[in-house]
Image 1 (cartoon, helix red, strand yellow):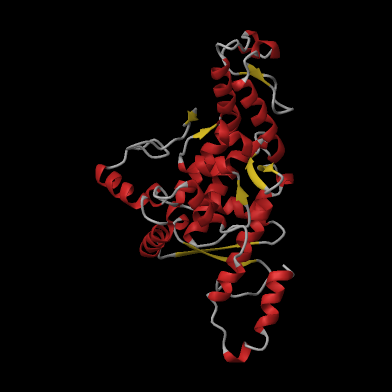
Image 2: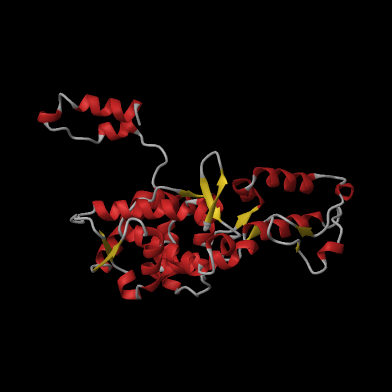
Length: 323
C-alpha cells in the first residue's frame, strides 16, 4: 500500500519534470554505488559549479525572522553560492565558525515548537514533522517561511554544514519523492499506527462504528476522507480503502501546501539531479550526520602531535564520559 503524492517515478523527478534518457541511465548506475562514492560525486559537482559567495548580516536576537526573510528574498544566482555570515554588533572573521553557528542557531529556532513551523513527531528520538496548524501557530507567512526553510536545507548541503536536528523518516522520503505507506505512520503517531493496523487486520470492523471521516487536529473540523464520508460506514468490504485514505490524509493532505513549498525551496538551490542518486537515509546522513559519534573510529583516525600526547587522554575521557 504505497502513496506517491510527490513521488519521483521512472523518467520523472519529484516536481513532475521528465528526465533525459541519458540521465536516467547514469542515475541507475549512481544509485548502485556506495554512499562514500556518491557523496564524493556530489561534493565534486558542488565545488565545480558553485564558486561565488553571498554574505549577509543578521542580529542574534532576530536570527529567525531576519534569516528567513533574507533566504526568501535572495535571487537565484545568490542562492546557488557559498554562504558567509556576519552577526551585527559582533566582530568576527567568518572562516567557517560564524556560518556554522548561524546554521545551528537558526535550525534550533526553526525547530522550536513555539515558533509553530514544525512539531515533534516522536518523543523518543526527537524527530520533527511539519505542523499541520502552522498558519495558526506561526502566522500568515508560514508558506513563504517553509520555502525559506527548504532553501536553508539546500544551502546547508552546498556549505557542507551538518544541521543539529532530525526530520522523521517519512519527511525525508517525501523530500526525495519516495513513496510512503502505512508503515511510515508509526513515525508520526504509534497509537494511530496501531489503530490502523488493527482495523486493517480486524475481521469485525463493522462493530467499530467508524465512518470515512476523521478529526485528528483539534482546530480542524471533521474531515471527510471521501465525498459524503460522514455517512459512509467502514465495513469489511471497504476497510482497505479506509486505511489507505487515512494514511493519505495523515501523511500528505493535511500538510500538502507546506510540503510543496518546502520541497520547492530545496530545489530552488540544488538541481534535483544532484540528490536523486541518494535514498532517504543517505539524505538524512548528508543533512544531519550521525546521531552518535563513534569515538573509537575518531581515535583511530586522529593524528596527535608530540606536544599533545600527554593531554590527549584527558580529551578522550571528556568526549567518552562527560559529553
